Image (cartoon, rainbow, N blue to C red; front, side, top):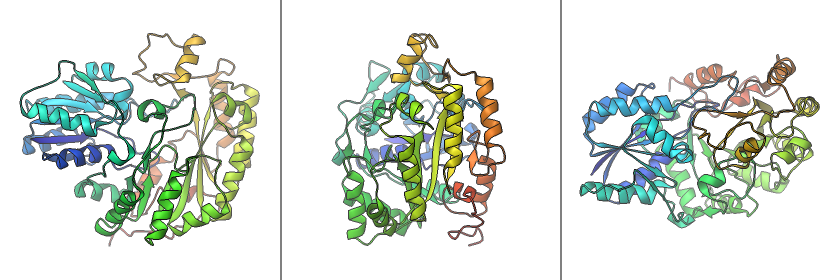
Length: 456
């Protein structure tokens, strides 16, 4: 059967990310003997009509659409993305009678409401590799499920998580938008952050991919597709169980080195580990600090303190690793006093970049949702499809926004709101600069060594 798989993502902050989920489902479907065409909304300049034209030429028997994000989780500059999905569905309907199937992380959070709003036919929640194959195998026979939404259970084991089928056309687009390609080494999250949907989507236990398969993916991207920068998309790369060290060991064993970055938690690293990672190409770290003082860190469900954040940042600086941190103000326990303390703490961090958010997007089935209901900030019947943000009752939104704006105005390496530099960074990507680009905001940073000239 011919299947068109469409990535509906439009998020480019802080840099565009290759649609890995679509390619992993495409890999499973192709392995099962189906013909798959991968399409991308960003690559088509966010034109639903252009996407529809590609679908028309391909003439698929089924159209799948991946919903990665519901919105941009930015209270200051809100953007709602489901309208884009609705427009894609409507455009596809004009050129084909094929059923439309939704999936992806964003869809899995509020599937019933997204299915209703977009007008798609069916949806898959959870991991799509197995269910998508089952759905397509049955659809090929004209058999469709009685329920419009089907759920994946049980979860795949680490060994069952297949490699992505990287699409050369899509990779070419993303490599010209920063030269960054994505790889997943594991699924699951063992942490208990109150706002986070990773444990809901991927489960609370780690499921590790075979390190040799991961390194095979790295070599494929580096050698065949000439990728110059890898982004490990795991929720936390440096997990407490040490799965990430198995990846590093396999890279060391095979002599593999390529510039890479990932998400890190502040605890668990040391000089020896960072040096080992550097030899495999580790050049930049995105640290999930999330809150900026000990009081709010505890309320967010964090197991570390701000001194751990400082120690982690100093560790990266000591080894020449570019570090960025992400902070959210207005969360549980926030007051004017904690906000002032948090601002001071962020400004004290040395030789790093900080992205500052205000308010926390409330997601379904999280501890933050339950707290918001308890504090009468939302109703238990609120489906949370449209963005709703938690703002501590003890702090005024206007006061907080003014305080953050004043504190970070003119501080080049502290970005508030978090998308303030997006246009400038995207221009640099188009000029041929490689990597996440926020490194250029580092204090004293005037140029980059790793540049891919557009003329080449």
